[in-house]
Amino acid sequence: MIQTLIVDKLTYLPWCYLDEAIIDNNYKAGERSLGTNLFDFFFQNPLEYQNFHRLMKSISAPVLQVVSQRYDFSKFKTVVDVGGSTGHLVKKILKDFPTIEKGINFDLAGVIQALKKEDPDKETVDLGERLELVAGDFFEAMVPGGDCYLLKYILHDWPEDKGELILRNIVAAMNPGARIMIIETVMPDFGVKHDAFTQFLDIEMMVVLNSKEKRKDEWEELFNKVGLVSLNYIQLDKTMHIIETKRK
Image (tube, rainbow, N blue to C red):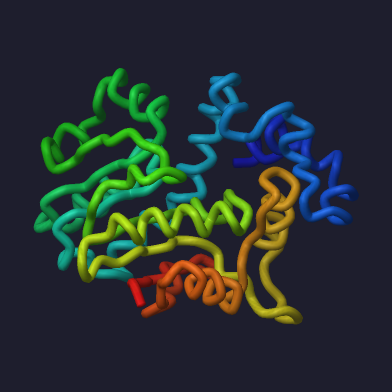
């Protein structure tokens, strides 16, 4: 985590434009410093892309340890991990809840193609046909149908209008009675002391991706815009939550 956050270009170069990002909400310091958006930058720089995947696994590790203890996924038949990367989250849930019939790891074509070329790990082999890799773009109407959608550290990567589009496309694809499980930071209210890493992450989102972490009232505002209602905020650690949502 430290290597990626301090050494890699994708992290330290945008901070050179911190002043501009604070003054202008639309400055896009990440794109100006990297010469392109973050995800195109990854495909042009494989080493930094690999480092980023290691970072995501490192950050996800505490979530993976507790997610199955905090929520019962057994009621779902098909679980879709939206932007699932290597699929470590959906694989963990499939392993812990054997009654789930299908787990779909949904990500960009380049990510899925790379996964299919790799030798499958033992966990993937054991899951067999229960795990499916599906290529697509969540900004387009390509999201697979499902009963449960996982979005871990996805929405905070995008400005508000892009986050709305992602959710609208998922809402359009949802099976009747489906749930969207958003696994993200819920920032404390103003004036409430919180940990330094969460503060850092909020500023990191601003300078690298022109986005931010959200307070509960901001999450509720987003849900209302896209036709969702929150059912539960399940705390995983100090600020990380599973936010269970459904159609209004």
